[in-house]
Image (cartoon, rainbow, N blue to C red; front, side, top):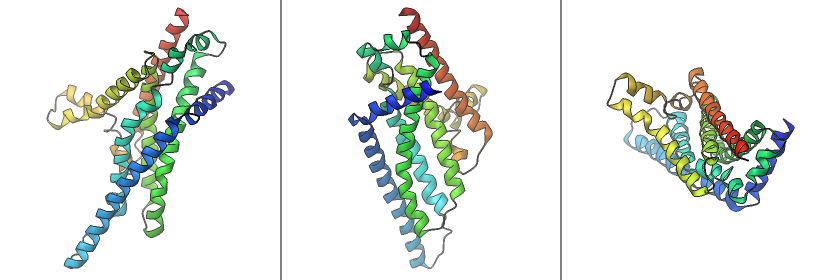
Length: 255
């Protein structure tokens, strides 16, 4: 556990001594701030319009503000996750330090978990920044905090799974651009698999739909903690880290 934490701190340090972490944090905060401004503005507009017409439509902050924002956050993360993982092992290959890792007394699992954990912590920091938007909602409104907490948990589980996949892809190349592009392609594919069920009801279509990461986020977005969705994300995370370990094992043998 000590080695995992040492590697994790090293990776976090490498993120924050370069512009990568600050660029990602700024981009995420600005984009989500813009989404928050638009969603909240539209919510206020609907409320004022209903009062002017003398018609009181049911207004729900959780459903009309928080839920769309969290769904947008999931989409934005799809674009930023490849930027987090593309350098994890590709940079080690490019600089030649991967041989040192492969022949060091540190176990492959410790290296992998340390790097992946650093990526998850960085993404968690990005999510933490967005919580500042919700402070205003809780200050001036009265939303239910439990669905928000469940949705944040779903976002973190989804990100952990996609980050594990990106970590594996980063071990396959020494080029960060290729690693980032391939990670984005795979993550996007896992995102759109659920579209098949919109026009096809065959068994294969249902299987593809079940493999979609967004399908399993829908219950979290509604504030419902479903064990099968959590198990799906944890399984996907395990598979990503497992394949990363096999890739690292092959590097160790070649070294």
